[in-house]
Image (cartoon, rainbow, N blue to C red):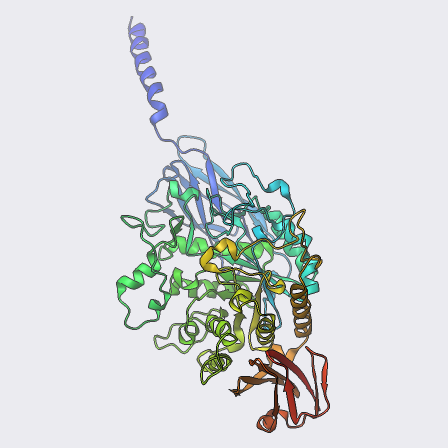
Length: 622
């Protein structure tokens, strides 16, 4: 009887327990580990793993492997995340080690984590230098090499070429298909706008609303195809610069449904936009309110603002950049919205990059209007607050603005062509003026040919200046064929498809088929300039001496080790002839010269003639 009583009452409790079991939290399988793998032999011996899985806070991670120690486990205020700090001894070679997540009651989930072998010479990779010309392209708008990936399952937006702000189908294979084009044109480095997954419902083509930091967007290709692109580019002598974003990410990232920590992003009671005033970070009188709004406000509704003051966010981003450098074989990084992420964090990032890759190159988007503001962010700047960014290169936005005005204005004391002289005269503020990236336009600005009122003469002068001034020239895709567009009309109109990149295009810029006379003239002019510049050490490394413009004519020299180039820009609607006594200090010892643009030979240098609205680049001979 006691047995029957026990069985009867035990059955009730068993049934109740069975009903409750689905609501009792037990650790589930681990769904995400980032970074997905790492490398043995890195200089920085600590590795932070972000591990995500249901109720991981109930587990106790364990590692038992020679040379690998679980130094610290951090339990987030979100029970679904663990952050593991792992120490890897320098002697540890490539291996796979286990991480067991002990529960004490159930079979422990296990991660088999791989440390890969580094490729030979990966730490000695050479970044871009002043000997390079950077070509900026937007992969969705450049060429469609694989139409099958235009409509990819699981992605929220499909290709629709009828929409200026929609996806158009360009991809990594499209770039691979046309690598020879870059060699023919004469560029040496490709800066490719972000290629990581942007699974957003609309306006996803630009790439700046990342939804997976470790995955190439499948509408562009795969991680393996990205590696292949870089390998094939290297075989052709081309370098690849990856566009990265630390300030923000897409609101459709899986994090937004389950944030790793409550302070993983900057949160406000309601949507609060950044004031975009990065000048407040150097302004000695700026209010804390304005600086906080600049740093913590969101870039857009679709872009959540990361909090790099959180050390786990900071480490996540640093490791992600190193992972891509090592995995893909990158030659450089262009960092988007550089000051927006906080200067102390960005300085730490730069030091970590240099620790692993001493000769790697990073250029920061420091979009500020004046030379002192931009100079603040360059490595070794003489800043009153002693801040050092350690940033190799910055974009020369002040010179870009001067270039846009110089050829449209009347020539005066500080207007017209004098704007170029005035801008260069402030180079004393830069610790390394030769490490400025100079440009006329990019994916966020008016196209230069529109700015120059569709005047090919002005265009040629602007390009002659860019290719002979100190620094590293960057040109925007389509500049070489006079593509046009105004930013205020919408970004889709300054990011139009490159002709020839899609089947059935009536114009093919890759073969120069169907170009107008002016477009073909511009393309052959750019090819001449870029191919000539490739081997001109005097342009890459030479000193500059320039002369105050007179009567709309600006003369400067680039000189190095007995070699000298004389550049003359005539910003007048009439030809100019002038005597050269004024330039004796640079012409002394030289008797003849050849203009590389017009194939004009000067058998004496006492008098120089320059056609209206044109440039001369004269190689001087003794």
